[in-house]
Image (cartoon, rainbow over all chains, first blue to last red; front, side, top):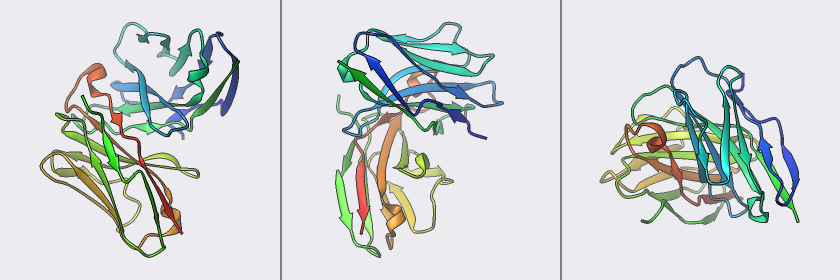
Length: 117
Length: 117
């Protein structure tokens, strides 16, 4: 079974609109972390936002927010007021358990977001 | 401060040759990770370093792959007798050890694009 599932291979969104990128995860570990990364065409993975499994509130970072629904095991990324520069691949990733120092990430297959002017 | 750096940015080699890929992590980050990104396999974990030791090598695809880290800083990933299926982008990431919450975030370098002819 996939540990991280991103069901939207591609999305087209009008500039200035909000966009939600879906991510569901599968783990039996009570302690985990969820991450979103952006990968523009240049190839570098840019960290966007983090949500811990014990966090009581949804994470927010500027225009990015994470809609964390623990019971549904979903961690959707919401980008408000999209910009042309948001066009990129977006990856959801998970770290399971706490083995201090070895927090290897498992990635989803990504969503390619294209912002239309 | 400086981010994670990797070299070379691009590498073209002939099948059967050995290659070395270098990663210089963020200063003060003692955890270092190598990942591989390829069209067929997505993003996959290769190896993790804690200081100079590698307690988790579970992601290395074959014994042709090896890695070392010296001085708790720079790491080198070596691929011996390269094969065409080794063609991919090799990404390095670093993080704080034992960080809680967002402190555990892994920050990625720009990657090395390897093409085996």
